[in-house]
Length: 333
Image 1 (cartoon, one colour):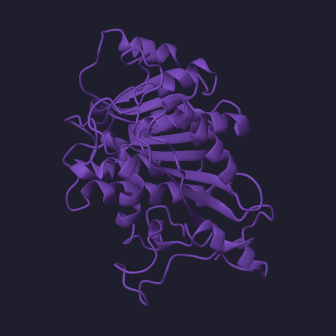
Image 2 (cartoon, one colour):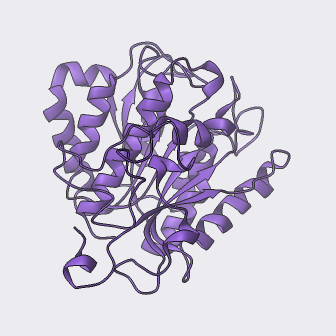
Image 3 (tube, helix red, strand yellow):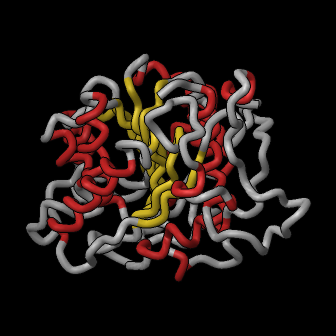
């Protein structure tokens, strides 16, 4: 039950009741939640329509290999129908202690990268502002290019943030074909622009071949510690979580999850798969290790349904979103 309900106000509007409407029916929103225009002014914050908005960014013009992540938001939403109201792993009711609403998708041009990046930032800021806005965003991508405009938005509100970045790849490379804005460059640009906390950011799940022997040194210079997939074997989950928490401290945190951090067996539906990745259990367990952290925003990117089967990747991404919403519900914005 929410604080509003305890105070005699309206409780948050939650998902459609699965005992009354079958899971294969109902609205095509994330977890069958209400749209943001349906919730009205019911959150604990009188100036906001929702505590959290789930926002789709169907954009993949920054990819370097397999396209298709523009269809990711709809696929994650379709795969979220089996989510249930109570999270026993985190011991929270993510839809009852906060108003979560689906803000739909931004309309982003696929033809002009610079225009798209500007539109994503503007759209995110609009969803976060005013009576029709939300306190926090959970963004469904889209390719990893979208992290840059989202970090610009976060930094304007919170200052430089500690980035907790789950990915097979560093995404701190300089350019591709001379282009500075791609899905492999967002965190270099973010570091250069002063958007991230250089003492608090961290990559997790890194693996596979690199372009140069200096890549890891370069990403450290840009502000990131690195936990490789093999460190999960050496440190164990608890050791990885301890390293992550020590790194971020009490800083404001932005969580960015590239679904290719998972092994292709657990997430085949992505654009740049790498062997030797995390299991879904390891990823979810690491996310739960962020409990109590000050998470100000998050994204899930690189879900490409054309390469998925049996919704394997979509289901994994939907559960990542659920754990992030659960973290939101337990910590103030």
